[in-house]
Amino acid sequence: MQKSANVVIIGGGIIGCSVAYELAIRGVKDVVVIEKNYLSSGATGRCGAGVRQQWGTETNAILARDSVKRFEGMNEELEYDKDIEFKQGGYLMVSYTSEEWNQYKKNVAVQHSLGIPTKMITPQEALEIVPHLNLKGLIGATFCQSDGHANPFHVVDAYYKAAKRLGVKFETYTTVTGITRDKGKVTSVQTTRGDINTSLVINACGYAAGTICKMVDFDLPLYPQRHQALVTEPVEPCQGPMVISLHYRLYCQQTPHGSFIMGVGDPNEPKDFNINSSWEFLEDVARQATTVLPLLKNLRVVRQWSGLYDMSPDANPILDKVPGAEGMWVAAGFSGHGFMVAPQTAVLLVQKILEQECFMPIERFSLNRFSGGNLVLESAVV
Image (cartoon, rainbow, N blue to C red; front, side, top):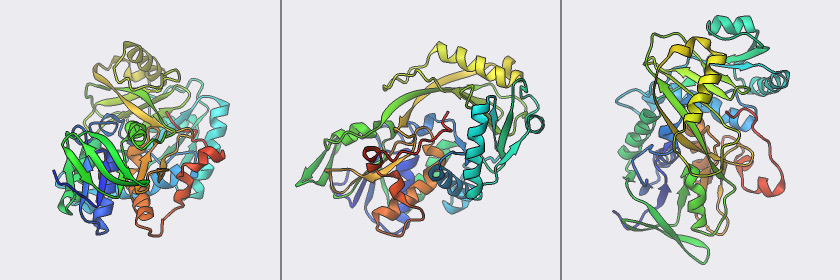
């Protein structure tokens, strides 16, 4: 492994790999990505793979809107030799309570102000989109056809290959053990395979970003939270869009291969690094899924797994310099939606690092919003 680099990126998921590409395409040389396992082995490879623009905060909606445009042309942009499998079957977000419906109205107003083509529809219109939807108690729904999902392993592979062609080095199965500083400035990254001298470090470790920040004596306002998912046997196509119910804590989609991927959030989930699967989840997701989508009751489960959200206090990303460690940046706190906003998040962060004009105000994602009480909570997290 090389002894020095202009930039060291810690984390080989979607954020780390996309940031590496955006740096390299802008002419930055000698970039190294360090990953403790294989690429996309963390949260990226365990996510539900959804890509939606239907968010409640302007910041998340902008990142998602612009990222969708990148996903649409990603095979060509990155000259990928396979297919990222981006399917724009839409997102149907159903509402079963008046409080939720009122929030959806506010969310759609934000989306419309940004040109996102979300529609507010009646229960009957929702049934025309998903014929096996349970209408009992349904007040209404929102639908955006250009939302969809992609294959996270292929997306990371596409960024990896494109970045590698531009000269980025990837060091997998390499664990970061420390970060050295001199007079408050980053000087090197210590790993299990040797040290790399550098003056610029980007912490893109997702749920482990807090652990990396502690190496420079900073407590990042972020905590890990387990989210479980399952995949079923493949069946004939019967559901085009992803279906989300915040009331039932459910997301459910049919992949291009016919299998259904689904998960539910648990409001009582502890804040820890547990990624074990549980029978309680299997029981919970089956109950919620068959309530919203009764047709799925006879599907057989192939496997279940869990991953970790990197939760920030307001469910919005943290993109900022790390206090007390000049030359170190953090890109984390995506709260379960890092995959879908990664393409444009990488652009925004790299523009800021390289002191270029940012396409949107990155200050909205700064650390000082927590101490200043300037939080705008994201309501649409499941």
